[in-house]
Image (tube, rainbow, N blue to C red; front, top):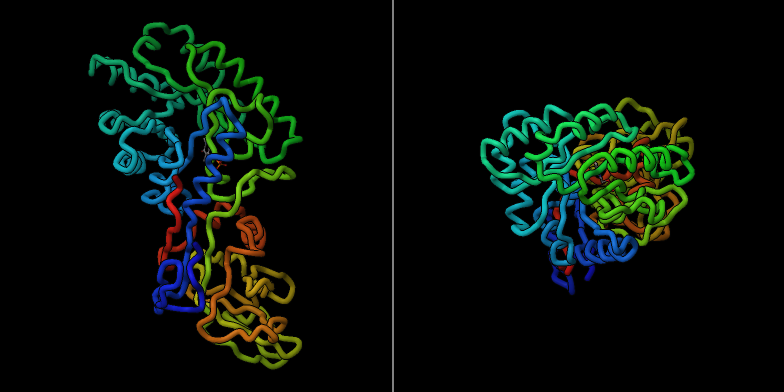
Length: 387
Ligand SMILES: *Cc1c(COP(=O)(O)O)cnc(C)c1O
């Protein structure tokens, strides 16, 4: 079911796009569910969880979490207590892990929604154990081992201290021991095996619990990296994080915006703020109703010296000319003249010919950032159900 473009307000087989919509974000929940099942099959017998932090990478946790639940996912990772609360309301039976761990004096809030903190330091471990002691029950949690990212997680000395503190460990109900890879997007990076070894060594010193090491890219490194559970996020949403290894997923998100006008610009004119682009020959320029407020990164701006972003029109690419502004971009459609572009048409910001990775690369960033910055102003459409 694909929404009918260029037919504003008219119901075809798909959902209605209001005539007033300047942009549309279409999230294909059926493909999201198919992506989760493809990864589940790839890593079986390990469990495939889903990372749905940051409002499901900007796609809308309210739709994404129920769709993944219907697809069969039972374990979800979020970053914050607020996200855990929302996830709990959407998936009452799910297992929830909070990646930011335990903020001071928030144990009761986590326990209230039966969310498990992923504890990343000795003070967090002690605070969770103390809360459990006061409550006179063992409370489930995860432990985060730092195997070389040097960001969050228990370092080797912390693991040793825990291993020797039977009293502290007795108050913990450790259900997951996890770590996170630094360079898994590059399958040839020796750091992957180094972290695997460090994680395995740390895990051996801790009580038996499910183990997890890999996010989207890591699960492509082979079954040594799967352990008991994998934690993909980006790949579920159709991203391709791994260099040289194609993940068995397909795009979930399409972003389109309207053509406001098409005009001829003679040679020697400048286009946009600060006049960073000057036409050398006559150009046909389309002004599109999308800007950095909609998530079209300002770093996609183009000058004569530096190319920037691009949009797609009927399978052809139209490069950005000049600065990206808050609500508008200007693109070169000189090579699309035969396609008859008109006011009110739609161009692809993310879609056929422009992947998340392409858009990220053209903005000097990564597809992850493109996804999580999609603006709130575009009309959102969810198709399929995921199940
Ligand atoms: C965000 C995150 C993930 C998911 O990563 P993707 O690359 O999106 O699959 C997994 N684990 C941790 C610790 C994370 O922070």
